[in-house]
Length: 220
Length: 231
Image 1 (cartoon, rainbow over the protein chains, first blue to last red):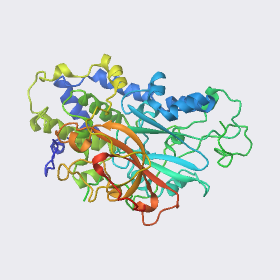
Image 2: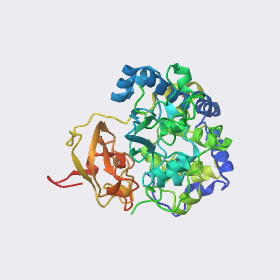
Image 3: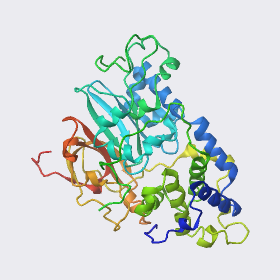
Image 4: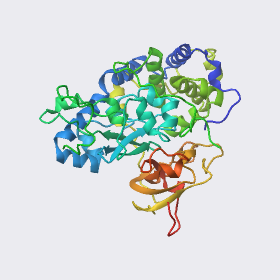
């Protein structure tokens, strides 16, 4: 299979990346190996249909329904499959719950593994060298880059996605969100809060509280 | 010695820069095309995800460093298409003749995209290899790291966790072994575990005494810690 080369074949293509993609797409299309309409369909799927709104719905439901949450944490795959959140890069899901004593954060140091059916295509920072290199060694400094400071009594557990298992963080339900319905709760769940580089957003009108009430315990 | 993709723990990369809340999914059109072309070519069935990852890892260190994310994808894809005989260098130069490719009937069609993406590609397989570790047991990872099956080959044991002592957190069942599957040596499924390592086991200056890193590791990456050993 792939070997080390002193002259990789890709060097034959134009060096400008946009032209390199275009050239390869043209060659493959001419030979009937790709269907341009299929490319449009793939792009439309991840641009418009599959994204963090899926994960946010799961989190909001877990906050609202203790039995759902228990099933999700015990064995996520059948629970997510029932909601239709299954597919490429989400075949083996594990949901990890943030609690006052432990904050979870997800990275892929070796490439860019990420739960596509729940969060879509990863953001640029998740794929950056800085995040891949630093998240495992100094997660608290990385969290500071996102404006997040954890209390000293909260331990950090970083999940390095080295296999085909994909991780979703279940953030803590923010204080002041009591009584909100699932749609309103889902609006508090950012993509980054499900990667673990942010906390769930406090609802507007929740006083001076910013983010989750880390010392308030599990509100569910 | 590892390759540049194995960057966990590395120093010198600077701050992580979060994107704007309204940032588009694809920063430019060619990023989207690069992703789509790569996925569509995967559907031709000439390689698996482990081969594809290894092709990116085999970019030269200079290219790996200077290429942006999707540049790595598209360049490794071109390399893979030639490696697997789907295209020739002459094809890449635009010097081949007209006419459909023998694999054209396998091309992913627009109407099949939704089903193919929804179907995914699960990595769990039945295996004759029984799990030998239970949650709570202490284990040590292989040292030196790297692939046991191919020199400079693909592995999912990062260098920073080679030779480290940790504790089995959970069993994931039996999964395809990337070290084998990336090199045409078969899927060789074996037990996979989530293993927790104290930050103090991995780093000279851990940030917090209770912080941990969890990695998913295959059974052949692990050995039991001798009874009474401390981690």
